[in-house]
Length: 325
Image 1 (cartoon, helix red, strand yellow):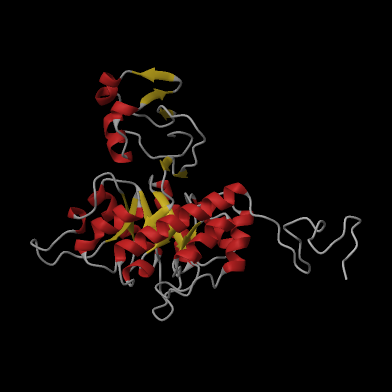
Image 2 (cartoon, rainbow, N blue to C red):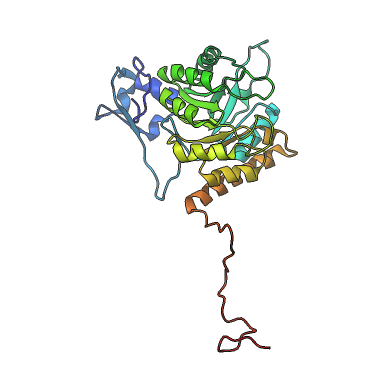
């Protein structure tokens, strides 16, 4: 158990745990079973089943509003896809988006000399491997295990898609894969069709968040599933990250105003005329939507208006409130 989250770490030493989870040991302190551990002892301490590990760090003043997934905190609420634009533009897109997490897909390596996306992703950005191409839970699990070996991290975005026309996720197979991988210590972020029962099953299976589509993947059609997403936002305790179909910064802002924890976008940016500029536009929209949600949106009147200025003292009134001819 690490910071209250189940994590398969038995047999690892503390140094390995910190490296896999992306922590800088200079900036944290660790306690095991309520006993503080000295930094020089990290390499020699082997974790056992049942150990309770606490990892803490200093915070500055002010009210922090981090996105927390699987015990990891992110200041950005924009997850960037990487699947549709040139490698040369990835660095600029990530930097303009202010993204701290980017998706990557696994494919078989044909030659040893081809360019690698990892060479273009700025240091410090968390990799979110996806299981793109998986048609069953078993295939998703296989891809996830390869991804952990390649990325040395536990994050994985589960995508199980058998429908080749509309590219809709298979919730049933996604739940199966989530349960298997969560037990293996993965931080599972499942892409799903927005269905409340499936979302609850994913939570029970160990998902760290849920990632419902807004409309078919790659469509840029926006919030076609708005009502179903609203139900998930109202009923689920897990972070709800809107994934697939968001086509405009204004749509990203709207889902953040609704209370979404984060937005993932790929096609909307990759198909824009100016990719870095669109990445920045999404960043600003997501931040604005989050601020509006935290501020509390103003009331909406369905049938009447409400004056924004006093209804007395008009220039055409006399001092007794009557109207001039």
